[in-house]
Image (cartoon, rainbow, N blue to C red; front, top):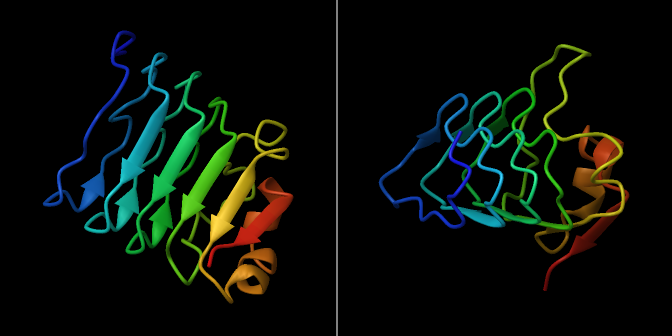
Length: 131
C-alpha cells in the first residue's frame, strides 16, 4: 500500500479510478473525485482507514465492490443527481456497513428521496440535500 500518502489530487483528465488504485493508503484523510470520473473500481479506496471525507463528482455512474470498505467516513458529498450503481451481487458492499451509518451523505437539492429509495439508504442513515 501507500501508507505515507496523506493527500492526492486526481486530474481532470482521469475518467475512471481502477481496481485497488488507492487500496491500503492508511494515511489518506480525504478525497475529491472530479466530475471527469465515471467509475470507481473494486477496492479502489478500501482499507484507507483514515479516510473521513469523500467528494464524488457528478459524473460517477458506478461504484465497485468494496470501493470504500474499511474507511472511517464521516462525510460524503455525492454531486450526481442519480445515485451511482453498485454491483448486483447481494454480497457486494461498496461501503462498510456499520462504519458509515453515522456518516452524513450530502446529495443535490431535490434528490434526497431518489437516494433514499435506492441501495444508498442501506449504508447512509443521514441523507441531506445540499442547497
